[in-house]
Length: 280
Image (cartoon, rainbow, N blue to C red; front, side, top):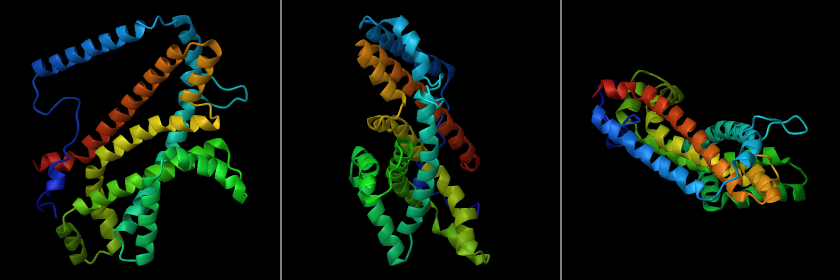
């Protein structure tokens, strides 16, 4: 099975790295110089707003999630990561189930999957948050703000991941499936042991991008009063009339968290791309 030809979809997805492959030290140095220059310009741009740094230092521990709320619960960046962690797990499960439904020959399974992806990709995330948080109480259940945010993010991003996972599964050559079947393996064993490991490498880059987008879209749950980064930034900025300080701090925290997600994505791409590099 290892001698099967590489498909065009596989060839387009190479493991990501900080610099292009085969780049020399001079090229990398120039890239670092460009980054350094842009970062300095970025800093000078925000310094032009006459920021009050003592106010930023005072409020930073709250936005960064280094302190707990009065009730002893996490807040700020810690709460944002808490919400995203559970939303990522749930969205992966929903996305995989929905992707298998899109590839299913069952009319019921296929219909449910396509309806799900169509609705949650076709309506705004903010509307979905309100439908869950404000709509469900009219039917009986009264969900709390944080579970509502996790559910909304999971359902929304699960729909997008469904298409990504489906594309990854389809990119695996049919010869791989036929080879597994010729060995007498059950269909689900072939899917779990042969197809999915190869599909993961193709799906990781767009999946990582979706999780970074989820990290930023988690700011929308601030409309429910969840004490995440954006809610605290708006609250502190409103009380002291120092919006720029708080919004800038929030932007930097989101940026740092996104870089962390990018590093994890690069590590996963490198891990699952080992076989691809060895064959090339």
